Image (cartoon, rainbow, N blue to C red; front, side):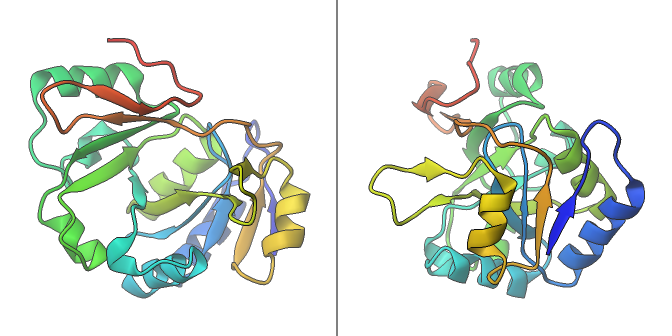
Length: 205
């Protein structure tokens, strides 16, 4: 199903429809402040397994990120942040960044693994923010790209996404054209904060 949502004039009834699908264990493809992504309710274990199957991965081997509604939510999934790391997050979020942080004991429960790190996102996109706010729980997420291409090719056109993935997911949100580049990935688990993938976000330290 393709659902058009205007990010500049959102209908809360449409957002509630998306939340109902997520809370029912559905997979959705949605826009963000970088590329189109696929996600599910972080509190629904079976939905996370479905997401892993979609990505042709074993759940305990995945490197999915989670989308939180704001910085205060991050503490529920990570170890205590150092002051320098907190300042960087506060300066750059919401924004097109994935911050790799030390995970607390909640993350292994979600992903059925011994993961010690977790990617955290707070996209600066009204549709994504509205969904997570209305759900009250984070999204487990991964960027949507063409696994059949030798060069990672992100999908920009919602109708192209619909034609390719309609039978594999429960909902595709048309929020306008996607961006060409993924989020910038920043590793905050070591002594130094390090960019490990250059993306659309520009890190300022």
